[in-house]
Image 1 (tube, rainbow, N blue to C red):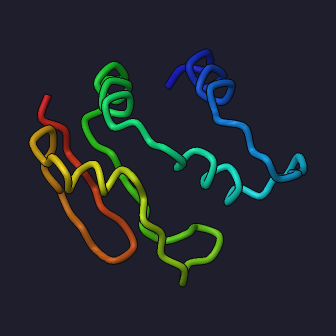
Image 2: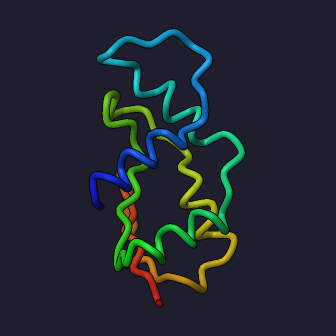
Length: 99
């Protein structure tokens, strides 16, 4: 990912209503990003990036005992045709794209 793309992605993040610090609470950002996810935009951006694989974490990296419900896995379950699950275990899943 280029630095220009990374800046663009940050600017495009939805607003976080909660106060945060420079060392911000990343959970607030994850919750904001997960609100109203857009599967078509997600797939389009992944295809444009040239990604071959996507690693999806099912556990909160800050609290390893807490699981999450990532929208990416819901997207993959709803229509698995664009990818193959390379592996899927309790802490993570790896999707390989079929483009």
